[in-house]
Image (cartoon, rainbow, N blue to C red; front, side, top):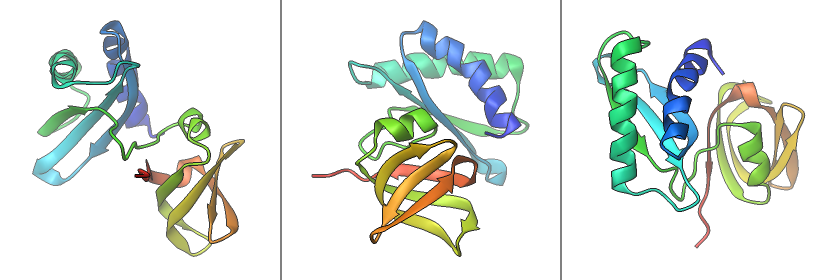
Length: 151
């Protein structure tokens, strides 16, 4: 986790917890004048639009006071949804056996995209089986990982 993401997590997590939700993860997409800070929240009872609005109001206030992001950005608060993004080793472990899609920041064994079955975690590595071959992907290499919903 980068220093900026760690700071954002430390600023946002206490407010989300105080409102009775779990901070599932944070994404910051820096795109010049159109940057986006996306905050994912979860709850045993699910998430609705009012929940997102409450968290958005709280987080917006914190971000205005602390000002950890230079320039303009859009704040989005959302549930993880069916294509649940995974951020932590604990989340990867909890979804072992699920079909997953992973994109890496840097190439690993000549590729950056993996689509297969999540086999769990080992140390700081995420285990994924693609075409009957298991890969041990270091979590720090993972740019984005999502569960592929099964219908």
